[in-house]
Length: 262
Image 1: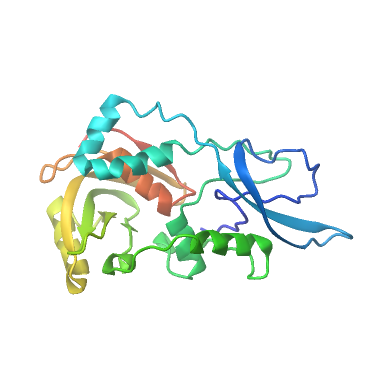
Image 2: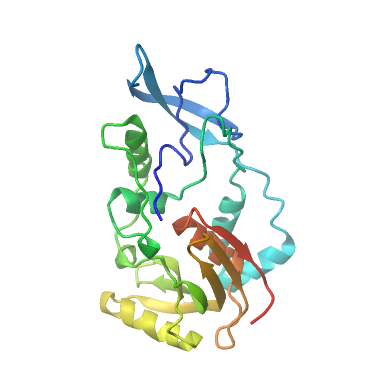
């Protein structure tokens, strides 16, 4: 599944052929800063690039029941869900844009470094001389991730179809940690997924902690994922948190969550 991208994350691009006062998306923004320009392939025109910060949405949708479920994965992970829920809903002016959506920085960093994406997904970015590409690279370089073994471990590895999954916390002995999602049709038990994940990270000295499990129904062709159920071995994972992680790495998918079923 391929995708051609421009500025579709929390950097907004101006200089379109439409009226300067016309809004291409519904996102309210502030701290708009000029970043640069490039020639636009029409006479006497420029494409002008800006960086901006989006105004967050109200997080009141995170009710007490959801916060209690977050305790399954630890309080340190609640801001991850809160940050995702606070992203403003994007309404696109389809006369001007085909699509616009939020893209996670780790996903874009992987794209720009030409590393493999889940399921062989291709996500094409503009050439290095385009102002859109320059803005992307500037955004990525504005924050550095700590160098540790977990950076080389894929965050999401799931199959297509219906299968069991486990949410894991990977960590080293220096305080570095990350959450990963693993699920496979070929592994019938949650304990099998733990064993395979242990083998995957053992050589780099990482510890693996199950943070609950469940099931995933994944239709890649229709770009849909449903997360539900529980694990008899490790308890029920925080499916909301799992869905946020999946959305970071499969940003074109529609992802739903249910706390029912097995």
